[in-house]
Length: 457
Image (cartoon, rainbow, N blue to C red; front, side, top):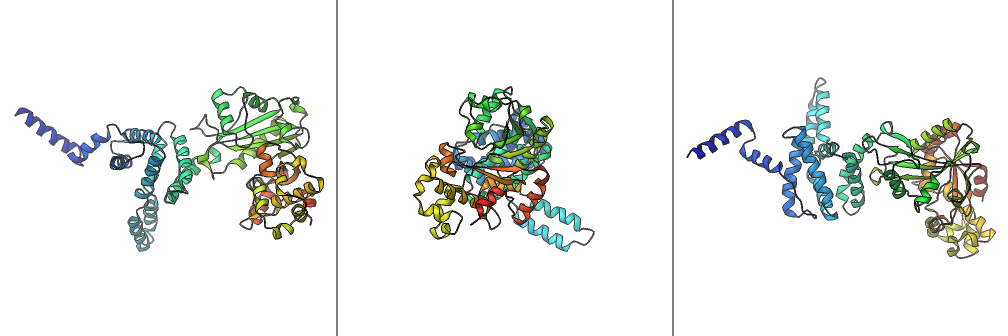
């Protein structure tokens, strides 16, 4: 009897202390327990997951409790398989999107507001346009390695977007959030050397996307005294490079990636170098695709190199041409015949020889170079910008298409993509900004005299 009375008193106390009532309090007790989801997020998990997310959004119990729930949610997401992650993300995309009825009400209030109330109504409309999932995404920032979690989350969204087009608004929300967090003003530029941590060096090997690093000896060669490597880092991801560039300090314009990466080549005294060659730029985080800071990286590195080695007179790239072979193979014969070198290329042999530049006769080789010049300098995407993605990147940053290099990359990848050719993009410091603007506004491609010669019909 006494126990029953105590239970009644306890329940009444809880009702006074918890305004939402005993049912909500019991649900809160459930949420404060352990969240365990099956790898594929089956139907029974979804209801519990919704309650957990709602509790995160409601901020019930204070910031510490909300953060703890976000930590649990992030951990459970990582444990899901691909199907489970897709269901989780679809849930966020569809059930935590903008409340259209709320937006309509806010719009009506904004239209009806007088001058004095217009600003307040506009703020209310802006709040209504913010989907609830943005609160959850922002809350993940507070969990351990939360920024990295969100970057990887966007990478997951990008991999699923074609299969699940409904995820596009969620991906756009996350891109907008990361774009603000990864503003270039918040990033730190650091030089990576052979003395850097083993963990960081291992990531350099893993993330290199242009010229694969074969082993530790290859990596050590790329970090020798006449080489440099620089990377952008975010303060909340101190051990994760965002993008990095590899630089060779040489005499004259480098024209062969084999020579640049030759482990047996003598080390040049950096004080004798007159040219800095940017031979590899790799984006290390798939989840930051479309959030550009590569142009800032190049300009910052140029500034650092000029401070360290004021004798440097020339800054250029040795770049791959990834889309050339695919473009050439798809050209109709009548279109090919109208391009510089097109008729010769069409009439002098089979396209199979394209992959072996060392076996091409001089006439056919010249025709191929002229077609390459056209592809880089004249072939357009959307009727305005360079079709080749690497060309577009450097031209938008203010570079000039300077020189083609024959048999510059004899790797299987280089032969397949561009018949072994590579291109130098030259960064002439006084002209970078004007060239960047001319290309961005008018699509004007800056070309050297040698490239203009190849473009002549």
